[in-house]
Length: 438
Image: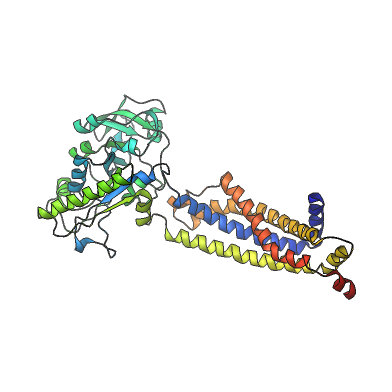
């Protein structure tokens, strides 16, 4: 019977090509607008490390007091050097790392080549296992390397390709800012978006790539300048990088791994205890106002997902609803124009269920055609989002099998939903009235 219903549907749709085309266009454009917007929203709102995000925490310490808080009472979203180093020394987390952004120059071995400008982070050895960073060759450095401020480096696969043509470079040396560093690891393709480990500097999304990771303590000892954001509530008393370390300016990101709720509660108690100590010593003149958020809450607090993408998604869904209402009206007009045909079929013994099935099949055919058009328009839409969105966000939107399958399924289901009432009205046509009127 399904084949028969499909044959009837195709025949009836051909009888009104203009109306059929209008319905297909309505569904196609409505679904494409929704799915294009969804592709962007999916990219920016996804969990960057779903298997571990609930165990990664970002602590905040209120080192500025009431005058330095935001309107919502929030403490600074980064740390000053004093507090970051205290947390590192006390080491109350399973794994932890202070980090700051750097941009060192790499001097190629070939004297005829120009230095390579890179970006990266100064981190501790626990950064790599804490974030499950994937390696192509080698691994991160050790805790002993941290303590000894060893001249070691982890580089990206992109930089490895540029310097060593993609070969295993572990054990080789590269010149960074005039000093030799031993390569201990080469990252596999790793550029999480959002860049959750340093939201403060990246804003969440970045088209750039971290090419080098150096030991935090070594970078500090060499006076390697901070290339990220620096926020101060007062002018540092001393100039230069040393003055920055001794100031209350915040410029260091911090992340800790805590396995369970009990560990998180203990760490939160530790933060409050530390703030009380600072209050008693006279450094803080205010009560503790700390925060400890897991990664999803941290990304939400930092408003990493742009508000305009949420609004755009709601607008697109509203457009889809309008398109469905219009499609329902067109289907109703199309079906009721065939009341005489329905009356004759009912008089010849056709059941209401048969009429219902046939017209619902017809609606499904419209949805399928609209879905195919929606696939093409969604692909064009995803390629064009760069015209209206920042590049670092637009590049995250992509067309994949899941998006294409979802586009087709939504088009068909949405059209079937829009066709429920018109189909119901068509199946309720009274044959006696139609035969009498004719």
